[in-house]
Image (cartoon, rainbow, N blue to C red; front, side, top):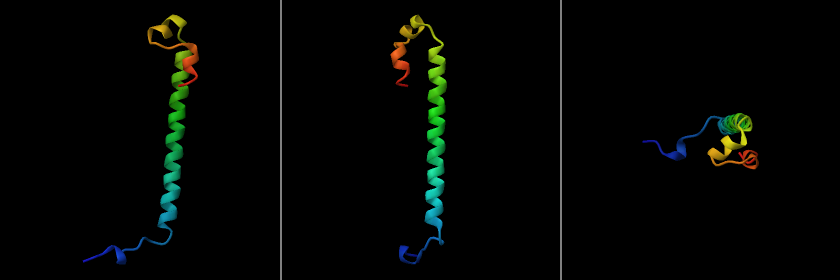
Length: 64
């Protein structure tokens, strides 16, 4: 029967996990920023009347 006392991670596994986690978080942040940029660009193309129809103003777009 194995216990946690005799189970060891390979040398450097924690460091590799941290690097991979950092890269995945950076990728997620990049994709989120890209999606927000695409959304803002599309909203800026709308007229003020169209923005009002969806409950937004030009000032609201910058907050997205």
